[in-house]
Amino acid sequence: MRLDGKVALVTGSSQGIGQSIADRLAKAGAKVVINYRSHPEGAEVTVKQVNALGGQCHMVEGYCNTERGYSIGADLGIVDDVRRLVTESIEHFGQLDILVNNAGIEKRAPFWEVEENAFDAVMNVNLKGVFFATQAVTQYLMKTQRPGKIINISSVHEELPFPNFASYCASKGGLKLLTRNLSIELAPYGFTINNVAPGAIETPINTNLLNNPAQLGALLKNIPLGRLGQSNDIAALVEFLASDDADYITGSTFFVDGGLTWNYQEQ
Ligand code: BGC
Image (cartoon, rainbow, N blue to C red):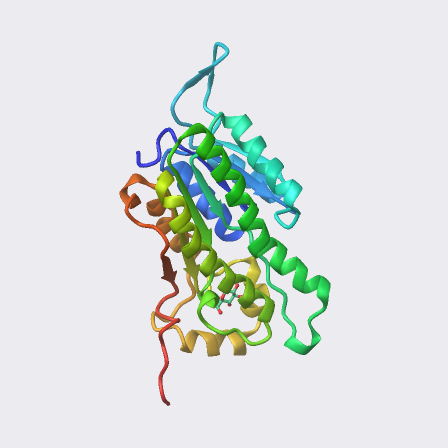
């Protein structure tokens, strides 16, 4: 299989897009570290799904270890937690090849009402956490001289405005240029880094929208393919970017948005 022998860490994989990515990477043969902050029960669901896939028999101290998934609690907004997450992931499976920076949050408020702690929460998880997780993984890959793949789950809002979500847009815009910058710095070591930019995907981050028929209807009119995306639409691309087939791809953003980003029509 495409990812046989690889180990991946997927941040924020107790629900939504992260959960699908963990499942998909495991189906492609990888062992996966599942990370949660506030939903250990969701992480357990992911671990069970992943372990149900079985897999090759790895002999560990005389017994057949088919474990594919392992979960670690860590808050991506706290740098000490981020470093511990990376260290424990490497310790658990003995290696790390793929980092998927998926964890992300958004907080709705008009710009003039955004509180400092809300701004910090968004920036810490969406940008600072990605920065230091990537740094910790890079240090490990350099030391062990392994190739590596880093995939950031960004958003169409690394490009498009999103009124009432100024800090979210600032974090995703920052992620766009972080990826471009790191693609240059990391290339000599054989590490690639890319962004996947989802549009409106049916996940818990969108609960409010999904429960508001008027808002949902207006959004659907802007999506040329006429539907919300599913988590697996994102996970399929992540699997490809994590594989050797994507060795020559770095520094790019791939939109998975049903055509939303470039759709402007005069009525
Ligand atoms: C946000 C969603 C939003 C979607 C499309 C995503 O990045 O998390 O809340 O619906 O973009 O605007």
